[in-house]
Length: 327
Image 1 (cartoon, rainbow, N blue to C red):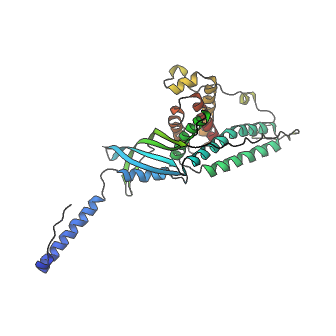
Image 2 (cartoon, helix red, strand yellow; image 1 turned 90 degrees about the vertical axis):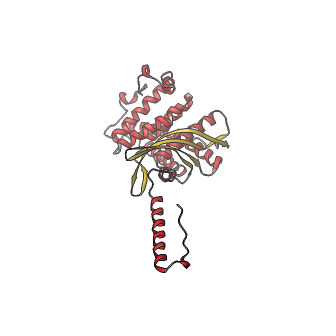
Image 3 (tube, helix red, strand yellow; image 1 turned 135 degrees about the vertical axis):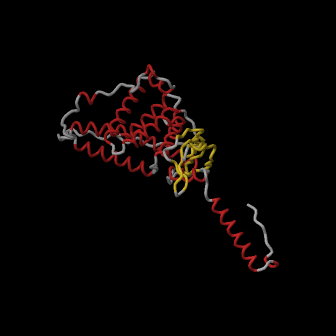
């Protein structure tokens, strides 16, 4: 906004004071109006995304508001952003390689624990629990992210890394470009998302890198003389109902509409994996004090991880990851 310049040296003092007061008032009004935004801008979106991706190994960049429209007192926005792994390709390759290694070892260790609990083998129970605790502690060290958005984006990148390893490619995902849509409302602190935005992967950027290999630990040694004990109100072998694995899938294949659903229905292994994962999801849902959070995480995983797969190997990895998380 333009403001007039007055020659105070040629104006009487009272007039000069009046013009000076007027100019200060105009400038104050301009500043106030500049700070009163009628719609969210890129800076507002970036502020909320920075909290959503708060994690020491991640970096948020290229946040941009693409479009928006008023919706009553709220505002619907479309935006893009990029999430990157700090440290570049080598750091990303090490992260995803060790993460996949740990996830691959968790399921056998959990099965060993369940078997030891069913037979009352105290030594085997202790050993399996120690092994699982060590895995969990290491996973927290290498992947300290806790927010749903950060973990989901990393899972998508990890699935890409697993595909690269299986294909013998020396390329690691270093960043993921995302397009999002969400609704924002205005509070005293500014514009904020009123709920979880919907995210869609635009591109996963890779860079040359060598994936390190991790040795597979030896299986827990069986104790020849297990000590009988009661676990969770049971003793002896697991019941026949528990021993029977679900065959799945959890949905009606006659109504399968997406390529991933059709892929699952055409593979007995994937169908069984789907059934096991859904069973674990329902168990976690019933035991959780935050069922809505579990539901949101499951929907986000299905949309952003499983349903972006194009190969059976990718779907298998997605189910393995989710099953390990739910258990």
